Image (cartoon, rainbow, N blue to C red; front, side, top):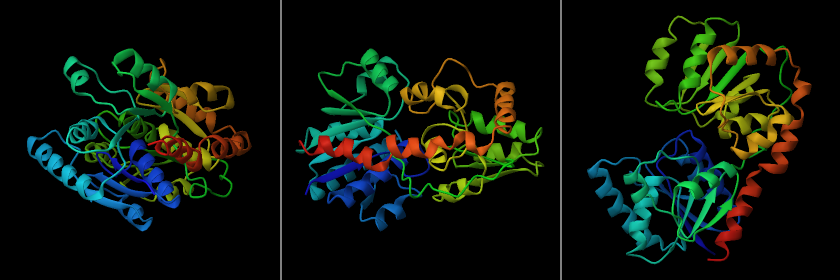
Length: 344
């Protein structure tokens, strides 16, 4: 049996967070002993129920007090758990793990879930493991173009979806309920802001799922709109999706909606790809369904996409679940990691 320690910033809604949750559960199911270290969040209970050890380390902040506390706790937990692999999933945790690696014996790996902001200081302190996983082709290109990887091996993986969890009966048509799922931080809430504007111009019921520093401000902007609601953070995203008819957004949440054969407008902070159809799949795969393309997200175009989508029957999207099961299952993602962990 191998011991794997996963390190990330938190366990609330987010692509990296749910990636680690599904990976950790899958590893335990295959006989691995897994510890997840983070600042905590909604998904702690799910991990514990699956047999994952969960510890709280405040690796979400660069505050000097949290830095010292994180390093102290990380050292203590690595010494007691004795992992074969310590696997970091964000830049701050990766830096802390690299420091621990100089003091303790283990294999360090990282998964890169997105493109980081770059300046000379951040490039200097960014650390990688001997093996690096990326969740899309464009992230690998970004890494090779911007960092000295010092001979590290790069592996591509996916955001694995639990297709049994994200499963539903037929979508109701005509569509009346729109859903958007995202962290609502300053750099991830542009779509939520546009949907507030859309709520004033449509009869669709719009639900925005997620928490973050922008939640209160967004809710105040939506006051008086009877067809707009905010759920805040939740670990029941699958139930929220079952109550909606169409999905607008990106990343893992878009794949979860696809697993339910929901019509998807694939647009968000990084760009706009519009209605997701089979002819756009190659591009979507290359950017991990984040819509990292040159076309910017604009209100008028978003409104046009949603209006056009409402004219397309559910049968036009029946290909989605089969595609997700074949190419984006949790099992496939766990296979990707186990293939590398097994060689440690």
